[in-house]
Length: 284
Image 1 (cartoon, rainbow, N blue to C red):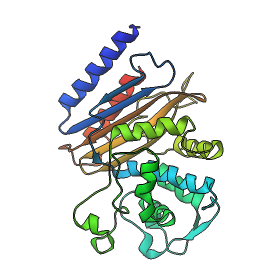
Image 2 (tube, helix red, strand yellow):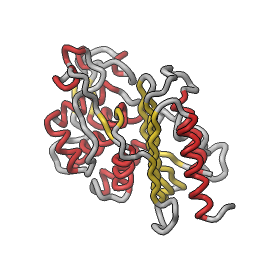
Image 3 (tube, rainbow, N blue to C red):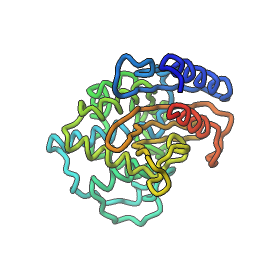
Image 4 (tube, rainbow, N blue to C red):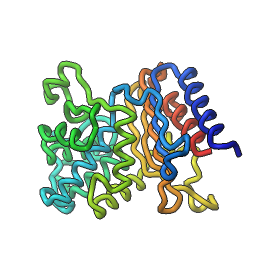
């Protein structure tokens, strides 16, 4: 076991080596819960660089929606009917289902996170109101996160900004701050904080950040729990989450990779594997 300073140097070396080996851009942000004097209490590498948000935009949407629930303006039980035109491309299962299905807001938020469902996300966006999202992001302290429109829609249904080629963007530092403040109970009342934590810990897309972590309670003596949200597009893979031992948060980690020459969605995509290896390095 190395001393704390050596551990910090080892992590910095691992991040820089991963960046040298990666064919595109890499951003990294780590927060260690507990002793603020620890050298890994907070470590950032290119974390202020805005990158395409992809599905990481769904993290603040979850918090904004639960904030509306806490304020009494939305209800988790309220139902929205899925229309044929609501079915978006990309990730998710709602695009495969027939119109007329009624989903509660709780259903939509769960699908948005655990399956990264784009159709569910766009229904959440509709309930929030597109015009209210960027002010909401500002209120959450996400200074470099910008929402320009719903996800995976055909050009004729995109916003003017999307038709100009603009995209939703964020930074690793913004996402890290959101996770840390959410866990600390600074963004939502305790009940809604617990709901957000429960949804994130039910994540089913675990191929990157949780990939090499001891998460299986049937196989591991002292398993960890990961609450996370990933995102991917061609040449892009992100993952962000909090790692817990029991109910105790140990650290929050955000790794964003952009511009990879590997444009596949395969099980060993370059960005995905870079995140998985760095996540294992942090855990160790």
